Image (cartoon, rainbow, N blue to C red; front, side, top):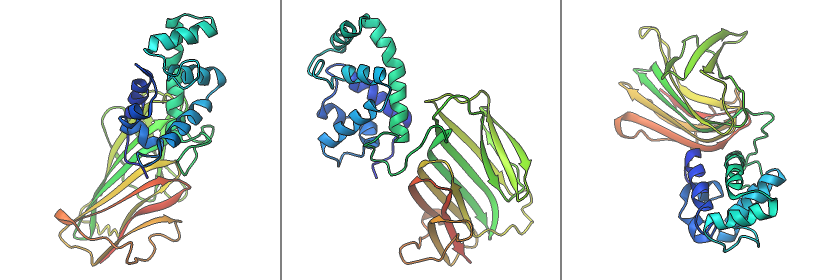
Length: 309
C-alpha cells in the first residue's frame, strides 16, 4: 500500500501539476500525495499516467476533455506551455475565452479529486470501490487511543478524518453497546444519543450539511463515568461500514499489564477478537503502549486490538 496522504495534499498536487508545462513523469514524481493515491512511487511512470488518465476520463465528457487538455495529456496540448497557452487552445476549440476555461477547471478538479479519493474509476489501484450513491463519506483516517488502568477502562479518544462524497449528509452515526455519552471536542459537531433495541446510536451532527469534496475532522472522548465501577475491558475495535483508507489503534496500560496482546482484522461480531497467533501477537512499547495499523477497510468487519490478563 502506498504511503499516507491527505485529501488536501492531493488537491494541491493536482493544481501544481496543471500549472506551467503541465503533466510530465518527473513533475508527478515530485508530488508525493498524488503519486500515493495513484498507487505509489514503486509503480512504473506509464502506469501512474494511465491511472491519472483513467480517473480523468471517468468524469463526464465535458470535464474529462477539459482536464486532459489543461494537464497537457492530449495531442493538442501536450508539450504546450505555459498553462494559459493550453487554455487558449482549449478555449478556441470550445468557443469560449481563457477565463471561462479557468472557471470550468475549478469544478472539474474537485470532481477529479473525488474520483481519486474514492477510487471509483476503472484502473484505480485501490482494492475497494466507493459507490457514491450509497456512501456519504470516505473515512480517510481513523484513530482510537484507549487508556486502561488496572484492567479498567478510563477513556477512549476517537478521531475521524473523512471526505464527503456528496452534498447534504447531515450527520455521522456510531453504534455502541455502552451507555457513556461522547464528549465532542471542538465546535463543528454536536452529538445526539438515541437508545436502540440492542444499544445506543450516537449521531454526530455537523453545524451545516456536509459538502461534497470537503474534508472534516470529528474528535470526541468516551469516558468511563465511574472509575470505581469494574468496567473490565479486553479489546478495543471498530466495525468499518464506511470505506476507510487508514486506521490506527493504540492502547495504553497504566498499572497492570496484560499477559498477551494481539491484533485482529476482518472478523464478524461473533468471531471477534479471535485467537492470537505468532504473526498477530503485539509487544508493549514505550509507556506500556500497544499499537496496530490497518489500511483499506470496508464491509462492516471488525479490526482492533485485544488482550488477555
